[in-house]
View 1 (cartoon, rainbow, N blue to C red):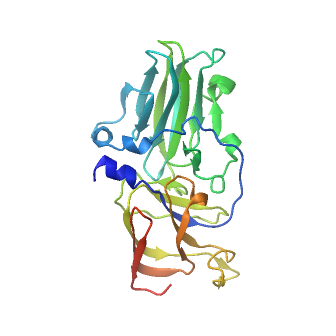
View 2 (tube, rainbow, N blue to C red; view 1 turned 45 degrees about the horizontal axis):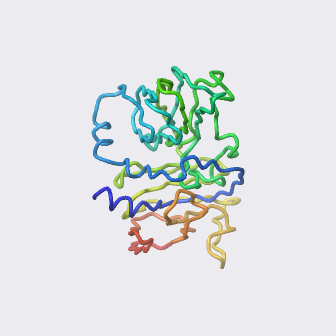
View 3 (tube, helix red, strand yellow; view 1 turned 90 degrees about the horizontal axis):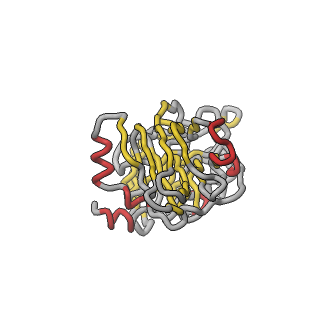
Length: 289
């Protein structure tokens, strides 16, 4: 699949296990005009094949999917920079400051965001993330090295930074840790098998795919109330408890996407769904929903 085609089709497909959660606050828009999906390229895949950890320079606009040490040094004023980090679905990301040399008083900044922001939309959305949005931003100019290591809540994180003076910059070390129960995930690839489990937690969970895909669901187990399976209401799955929703759209935020299908009943598959770039979908199933 060519990079241009991937860009045209970078809708995000979401399985949303709706267990109801609330959270809302502000949006930071430094990366409003970035298209990080262009960085899903052959160069990135070659990096994945290399030995880890390793070291390299960090670019003003960058995407990384591996552990290592990364250094940014400004060769001229860099005013609108961002780096997107992504790991395997079953991993957290830790960003550790090794060295920071920026002028906070002169307008420089270095901010970590717990998740991704693109064109004003967030992943995970405010409704899905366990923290309020105000607590998802960690500003080095406010916290300094008192928070030298910052761990994400899911397999994606990012930094915004601005450095005016040539020669200034910072060095980061990126590490990953196992996540036994991943909840909000962006997939690196269009292929693979993934199990999403929400163990006795009252929260929403999302699995996002940045490609047109064929999805095969092998098993679906939903919650029960007092030992009885919750029944589907006349208004779809909403309001009945646990359910899975298939969404499509051109942004990151699940709350702004178009519903494509609801799954309200547990079943043993296979059930197959195909979703294209225009969010049209077809389904083939050998089971009763």
